[in-house]
Image 1: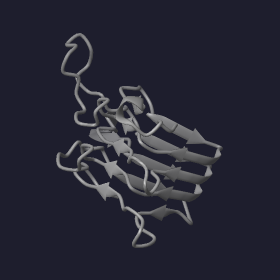
Image 2 (image 1 turned 120 degrees about the vertical axis):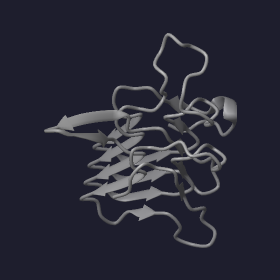
Image 3 (image 1 turned 45 degrees about the vertical axis):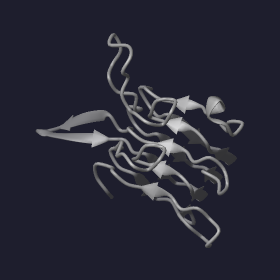
Image 4 (image 1 turned 60 degrees about the horizontal axis):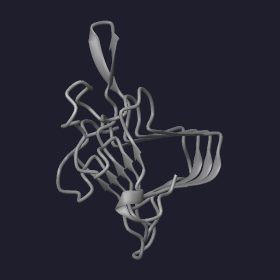
Length: 165
């Protein structure tokens, strides 16, 4: 799930009925330089050119879901960032309350996951909010790195999301 490093080679994972990228029971996976929940330019979460389709490009559940995995790198310092925005479009009715589910990045029962150098909830420039339901969720996950570990590592920009946990 890694492009060749130029915009025309960027992979786009959008408008799925589930997760954009699902990493389950895996080890040693690198994911960088992708548009997840946005258009191919990482600039919008809506379809502008085909009114016959739905308006939203975000994935129904999570942009990236990681479950029972280890040694996963989401974004790599020095590489193109992942744009993870506009995800979590699914609503569930419980009793009389409506809950929005899904996240930019959901990490469950996983270790040694590194999340660095990504744009989560923004456009590719980090200037326009393109919200996920929640930016990043850790669920029974330990020994993971979210952000900067040294001055030479690029941190994540996590902004514009609808709720925080």
